[in-house]
Length: 634
Ligand code: CA
Image 1 (cartoon, rainbow, N blue to C red):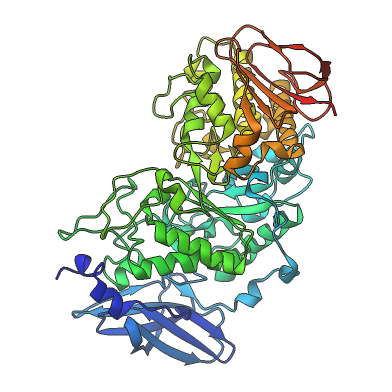
Image 2: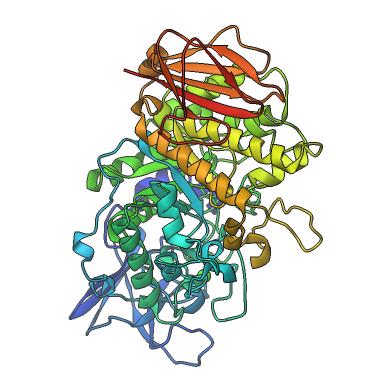
């Protein structure tokens, strides 16, 4: 039987599913145990090196491994191996390959050799006291800020010293030339609760040995359980990247910010070279009987999460990050390629050690060739993964227009007939998602055009001022909607990704720093500073009123009502009797009659926050292209 077919059979799984916890290098001061899963191998050896750099000539010390239960091979080497690099040599049918350990927890430059590590020695001072500052809160209390490590600091105007590095993220007191706060101080002031980082694990598209400027988002995993070396001050010493990433997490926690990691288990950088696929040929990927890789990811390969040892590998990996690095949440890239059972097992196993971790992902329905019949973690299966949320493309495309049609208008740019849909989006209950805890509301993220670029393309006739108003209206809709809001870093300061020829870049995954960097100096100009203040005010308003953050469908059904009889295109909602939200995308003001009582305008076209901007009774006028929030006086 063909291997690729064999792997998915019950017979193979019964014979070779290993559930032990000792895979990888198990460091102890006097001895290190090595354990690798390599069913059907003829010979397995571990090779020890002094250097983690494969470019350096070095004759390794070779230790044979012994075949044990369920396809695992083991050996133990005496002595203190902390900092010693290693690879596995696996022989099958007379051919020998040498590769990194899928369970590597430390690696040398570019992740080609694993390193034995005494993890205790990589803990920053006070690490045992470090904890998630958002623990105990509800997921709907979160406001998530999506950030790339390098984008934050790489521009000169950031005033940050350690540009493009983990440690640059936590520099404090940084300013633009004119004294505007940048980096971490800015993020804290904005009021978000979590940073969701684009990939932080070791990825392949940036050469860590090359110091010249290189850029990539990092959706090309090489070592799943090791931080990326190019974000460390030294990519050669396996311990440095671990220590510095932990320092970053620790400092963010001290500042009150939770840390979410973007994880890309759905595909690997190079399927043929990926270590598990070398040790057990093709096992990690979905490959058909003819040897053709499934390509639902669009990246050349899809992960066979339905294979028992791939499932275990992903579960072990997520648990490891949550425990060892104190990561507070996981955003799964293209989770629609992974199966429901794997996702539920991840949630279950992580919750056993930490109940405060968030889980969500991109549940798009993709064309993948599963190796056996399993349900996939797509939006319409949301009820099968109750602890796991999904990105909401309904609100994304309804508010600002489809991401697939650059010039298509959304509600804020004047698309007609959207009132009912916007009401539904703000209410946060959908056919595919009946639980607000599973609803991740966003209008822009790293993919596709930035919010401001999309608005500029979809409403070219609008003035710059009107386009900014559209941006603020869009922000008000998703930041006040039921569910969990998520924003792209820099959206609050009209971020744009412009090429040298002034065209907008839709997919900047490998564009230059000039395209991707956050331009902090723009905050020195009024329109950027005002938009930033508006976002800050929206977040402050959301945090002040728990009625915007319900956790059940029942609460929403009971408390959120649409206002009727409004002018065309105008949307209004009343929440728990005492909050009114009005959205007016029209180029004309609209009058709204108010329910009984005295009302305070706290969000208007110009300003957002929790102070009373104006009192109103019976009727209020809502300005063109603007949002309004009113709170009834007690
Ligand atoms: Ca790397």
